[in-house]
Every structure is written in structure tokens, then in C-alpha cells.
Amino acid sequence: MDNIKITPNKLKGKVKIPPSKSMAHRAIICAALSKGRSVIDNIELSDDIIATISAVKSMGACVEINDRKVTIEGILNSPRESDFTVDCNESGSTLRFFVPITMLLKGKKTFIGKGNLGKRPLDVFYNIFDKQGIEYSYEKDILNLTVDGRLKADTFEVRGDISSQFITGLLFTLPLLEGDSKIVITTDLESKSYLDLTLSMLEKFGIKIINNDYKEFIIKGNQEYKAMDYTVEGDYSQAAFFLSANYLGSDIDVLGLDDTSLQGDKEIIKWIDVLNSSEEKIIDAANCPDIIPVLTVCAALTKGETRIINAGRLRIKECDRLNAISNELNKLGAKIIENEDNLIIEGVESLKGGIVDSHKDHRISMSMAIASTAAKDDIIIKDYMCVRKSYPTFFEDFVSLGGEIHECDIWR
Image (cartoon, rainbow, N blue to C red; front, top):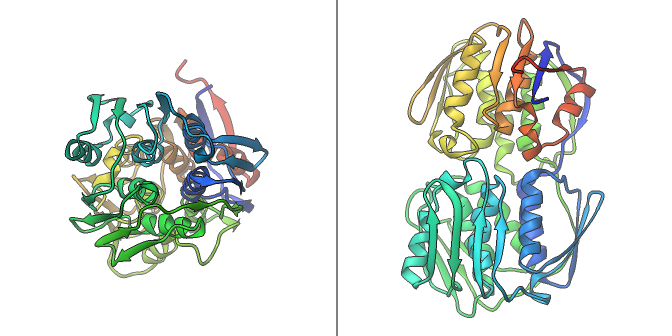
């Protein structure tokens, strides 16, 4: 069944947070671009990570999966010489990272995917293709992109207020080109922390990038990735759900996190402190968009007014997350006003029960589950197992902490 009923209950116990999806994407890619064999440990085979593993295999990498370990023989040992297809499923990271990476190889590359992935803008790459005379074709709103050509060293001008994923894709690729390159950021940079993750992983695998205050990146060509073994740290974007449950009255010992992590979603700790304060409550979504849905749950149950600002990019995720989280929480009695790029939230004492829709978005589904811990009556979540995209065992962990769930066929 696709629907689940949750009986309200506070959660208690210990939970080990799954590995960082962001770090796992980057480690798998660096390993695949290395000469030799790398072992990446502590991998959760979520749909997004499976998409990235599939992508490196489509390029010619040899991948062996053994429990939570992924062993990778690099692409450059036996690169694909013919046309190939990359199935990104619903992973925006896989798509935007691999468009430039695949252009290291000969042949025609076709990118396909599901859901709203075809609606995510790729104009940054189209502008590069036009400048370099690279042939490409695509269908509007459907991911069916074909690229025929190889990327050349150059100066790449990229907006910083769209998605750092475009910059990361170039940072992976440019060190392997024949000449030197430069990436110039033409606007204020958002999601800077994701670039920090990229740069730190590149350094681990032997790649040197000169970062001029995030305004430009200087990349020497003809570098080599060095194979290595790496263990992925815990994921703050997933920990955010249980840390938020604690804010709402649960008692969960959240394990497996690195206090020194560079992950931007570590800001969940700062923003929960803001909600705890009696001062003006303003949450800036610019550098941590993935934790905004569950922070909205917390804000909905916080006395006074909270504003979530700079949140426009949430509209082009797996669903329109600003619309989804405000609509579904309002069904449960929250008081949220949705604007173009912000939310205004007036706190209520508790939520009522009801039927909500995940919008087939993993972060909305998990946020609704956390909302149930502060509800008066049962909450039914439609399409709850979209959590497979990032955290396949979320509801198993939820139950292990005392969550009471039942499959529900109310829509049948």
C-alpha cells in the first residue's frame, strides 16, 4: 500500500543517522574518476545514490557492492568509447554533476529521468554548449537531453544563485581537461557549504583547486584523481528530522554525526536555537534548503511569528516544497502564509489529525511523520514510501523509536 496512518506519539531511544547523501555522491564520483581501485564505506543505497552508481557504471566504471561498501575501479581504466545513456531517476545531483563529467568521454550522451527532474533548469549548461559549439537537444519539461561533444578548457561564467550543483559538476570535470580553466561566479553565491563539501572531497582524492573567496575558482588541467578508501559521515539533512522531533518534545539520542562536519544542513542546530529564543525568528533558507520543510513543522508549533526567507529554490525540488509544506500543514491546523520566496508562520499550540499528501517528495513525507508527534489525532500520509529516494529505512527507524504506524487503504 502507498498510504500510512500514524497515531500520535512522542519518540524515545537511539537512532544512528544514515550516511550523508551529499558526501556519498561526491566520493563515488571521485573514486570513479580515479585511476585504480577505491572502497567507499558506509553507503546507504537510496534511489539517488543508486542513480549515481548507475551513472558511473554507464561511463565504464566497474562497481562491486557488498553490504554498505562500494568498490570502484575508475572510469579512466577502461573508458566508454560508444554512445551511452545516463538514467538519473529523480536525482538532481546526478543530472547536474554528470552532464559535464560525461563530456570527458567520446560518443553521444543521453540523460533520462523521472518525476519533476525534467523541469529543473539546465540553462547554465546550454549556455556553455552554445559557446563551445557543442550539439545538444532536449524536450521541454521532460528529461530527454542528448549531448554530442566534449568539453574544452575555458573560462566558465556561472550564476551563483541558481544551484551550486552546476559548479560542482564543472569542478569534478575541469581538472581532467588538457588546458587550464576558470569558473567565475557572476552573482551572490548560495549553498556555499555544498561547494565546501565538493572542494574537500576533491582534495582528499588529490585534486587541487584555487578558491578565490568563492568569486572564482582556478583549475589547473592535466591533474589526476588518486584512488583511496573513504568512509562516509552521517547526514545532517536526515538527522534534522529527529532533531526536530526532539524540539517538539521527543527524547532521541541522535548518533553518527560529525561535530566538525562541513555539511550546510548542520545549520539545523542553529535554526532550532533561533526558534527556542524569544527574539525575532527569521530563518534564511539560502544555504540549507533541504531542511526547510521540517523546520517549517517546528515553526508551526513555536509561539509567535517565524519568517522563512530566501526560499524560492524550494519550488524546483522534487515538488514545489514551499506550496506543499504550507498546504499540508495548514490542513492540520497550522497558520502559514505562502509568498513567492518566503513563508510567514504564526505558531499554534498543537496540530489536529487529518489526511495529508507527500506530493511524492521524500522530505515532505518525513516532515509529516515528524508533525504527527505533535498532533492530537491520527495523521494519514499518502505515498509515504517516497522516502526511498534518500532514507529508505526512515519509517523502520521511526517505529524503533516508538512510532505507531499502520498501512492504510483509505484511497482504494
